[in-house]
Image 1: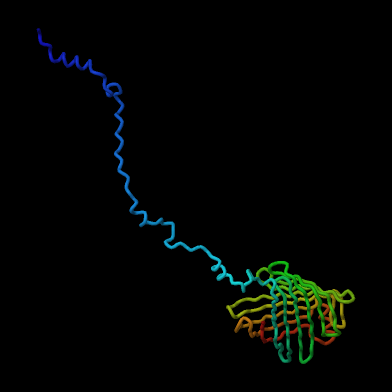
Image 2 (image 1 turned 135 degrees about the vertical axis):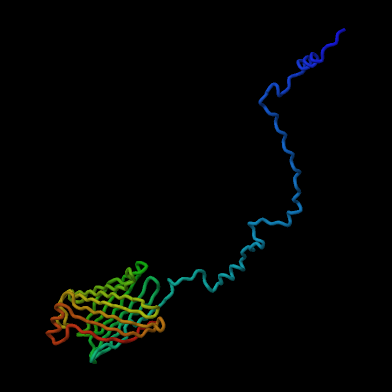
Length: 291
């Protein structure tokens, strides 16, 4: 018996062996082995030692009735406001001496009493010159606020001097215009169909927190001629002033200034015909106060 060559034996064994995975799919890699998982850590020993960052260390205790009673005592009667409280204000806007070689006293006051919406307004004006009373008048007006800065007013005016007393029905508006101009515009109707209108504008210019310059302008217009009082129809008079005050306190302010009064058009002609001056400038010093 002849010996079989070793090469033939190896070739026969290779042909009879089952095909391997690498031979069937030459480009497919064997699937990777899953990574070994770490055993779960035991955090039970940290549960009582660490707190979440979004919670306070000492929580706020719940609000109690005792806390509410301490914050809002019964004496406050809830949310107290001023709309039902009766208040008042008295302003001596001009309490002054005016003059050059001769002079006199000038007085102008404004008073109101009431609440935030409805108020009773009292305006009183008086002027003397060289010992004679040149004019005294008083307005009693009921005012009602119709916007944040404006009131509508209506009532009566009494001219006591000069001449015989004269009564007027009055209606107008007053308030704070843009740029902080204080405005009073009032129309009047008197006996015999007489009409009259008055406009007053003033402004407080703060030079410092206590030093204040106040310009003021007043205009009067009449619908009919009244020779007994030296008044012609149309634009009758112009009064202007410039006063510099120093507020020692907000409610106490001495001042000095200059005023200029001018009668216009037909009223100026009536003044000259009676021997009076149509216009005059005067120095003024006085006290502005309120309470």
